[in-house]
Image (cartoon, rainbow, N blue to C red; front, side, top):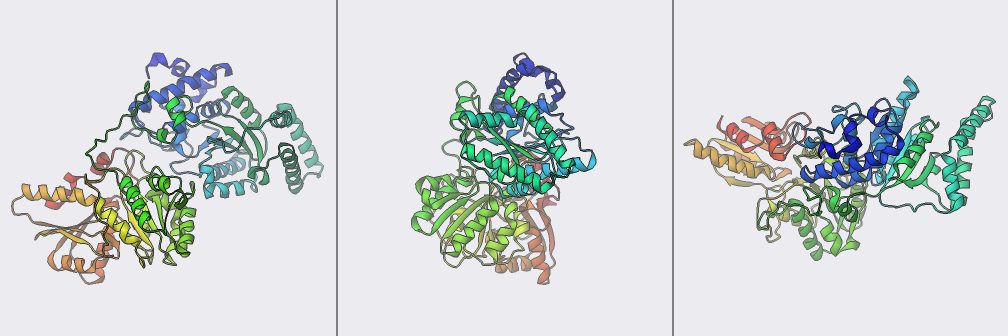
Length: 630
């Protein structure tokens, strides 16, 4: 956005500059901030709709609270682009999500205004409570605010945090950014009066003075204070004819208010700022606010890619003859299988479009379940259905499945229940960075008994593995596959069973055996072809192991007998992953070939395109070719 179009925003580098403005000037700041986000994301894609819906909340928070000394803890960094722009990163915002540029989500390593990592959902309340307790212990002066979206409120960790907030002394403020109108706006004179009364400075001053006097006389101990809060909440509920979970937890509730009225938000937040005890401010917002296409189709405009600002036309790079995305192959294949097998059901934690389960959802809404941001519940819910004879396909992004680790073990693997756990976005995902790379699933899961773990090299393999996994007697089955396009223009193929625990020799050779698992095998095949062309006499064998667990013992015995040098390549953590499994298998059977493992390093990989990141970590074609020819 040109400097002369920024208006007041051009004078704001940090929140201190924002706080110098008159409150009447804040609507203009919001307008320019929203316009800046739209124009920047039209050419540098990112998460659009969520940040547009949180503009007024962002401006009000930084205007009222003394950041960075006061702590704002964001939940789901999708909504924090305005926060980044107002906290010293406006000129660098064009580098957002780019290699060596601004991180995709708030990170304390990037800015002192970013108080906590928030790439995943539902952690803000717990983190903010920890900070609020620390503030009371250390100085007692710092304000702490958690900003949580309604989607994130469905996560179990959010409820665990709320439960602890209600019983731990703290003065934190929870801002609920409710963008789907799940609770109707309050109406009626008495209800509105109560809402205004609860944020009235005189009322609260009198309330605090009365409370302090009663406490000094010994009349208001904690148990009685909580009883009075419950009484007040009961009176409010009786008059307004509604109750909510926050008041039941003795967290003072205010709202719902219009989350796009920045001047009113400032007034309310100023009154709540120094109020003692935990409180929750409920704000109604519109996802995509201020940009009509995003308001009308918030799901599509969550992360729309490049687009024309004036027309709202999205600019898509996919040509008609390019390979389909793995997620779409999954979605179409799931529906195809469900049409054949009446026991198949689909489960996703808030990602029906992201994983393409919406394809089955549209055709069979009664057999698909979006359980919200609740990965652990998704697995256990799937386990319950499997226990009673259904065949669930539970699709979770690999990085998000980390939150369901105990459920996978306790509620799936121990009983060897026939749940097909599909891990989308396995391996490097690109611009979403360290919080979203699917780096750890093979390491975490290969030690769990009863799990079958496989990764397809291409779309045909994915379809056949999905078919195999739903056949009788297959037990708990994990299929991992990456983000993005596949490699085959014609992705359709007959649905045939693949024998569990079998790999494939793709190419014979004499000098070195390269063992791969998953789609990284396609890059390896190219590297081998080039290496042999460029090095006369070089002969390299290539094996697609396909199953991490159980391993193909017959194939590995062949490798052990023929080769003294083995290279393993995986799009996952090198420490403890596929290569380690091969190394352990060889050592356990008295084979000691030279084994070189290629995979993700023992560090968190930051953001950039998948191609850029593979080059950095040494998993691109040239790096693999160099390793082969060493």
